[in-house]
Image (cartoon, rainbow, N blue to C red; front, side):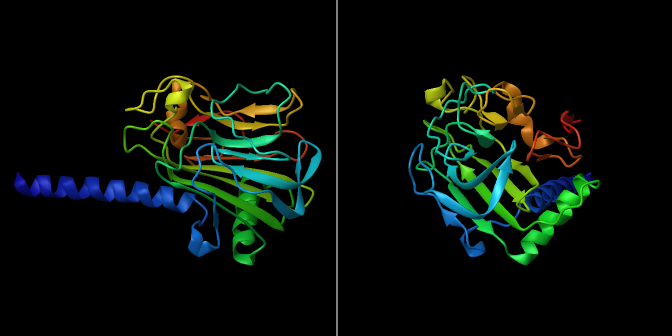
Length: 264
């Protein structure tokens, strides 16, 4: 009987390790050792303006600069300090990509990191992923932005719960894609958004998706601003749990815009 329990514990350990490895491989490499810049430790803070050498076309408009905002948003034109997410479509808001728009507080834990790159190995990985998800579109990446929220805490936290997620913007100057990667999601809401300090749940939960700012074109990942968003790391539209991918240069194109629930 003791031997059985030893084997059972080993099997459970291997399963958990395998799951952790899968989540790790889902994320694009990040960290200061990869050349990332860290955002300042500042509640509701942002990066400085990031000028990009290759325009990113988003809903028919070309953008030459962006911001990586602490509260889970990559925005074009202006930074975003708002911590409680509004529903999409926004009422005349700025265009942005929201991997997980919620009340992050990196003063309490975690880092927001980003780098834009034209490094050949990473561009090749981007190209391979886009070719896999969009096989009918000839595409070679010439520029990418990798923005990562690494083990970030929520505002008012009285727990050790943290989230790790990532937005990857990919373009060749004409065609543009985004990938949203979710490694570990443990909270949905900060206290100032009505959440519980001990659980990070309740109130107005995080929003995931993107919005053009024109009040017409937008996409909500299913579960946004509901308690179901806690399960986003187990959902997908490309048959890879924890990853969502879209073409976004003219209008939202995905392998499927329907959620595939991988919890079962």
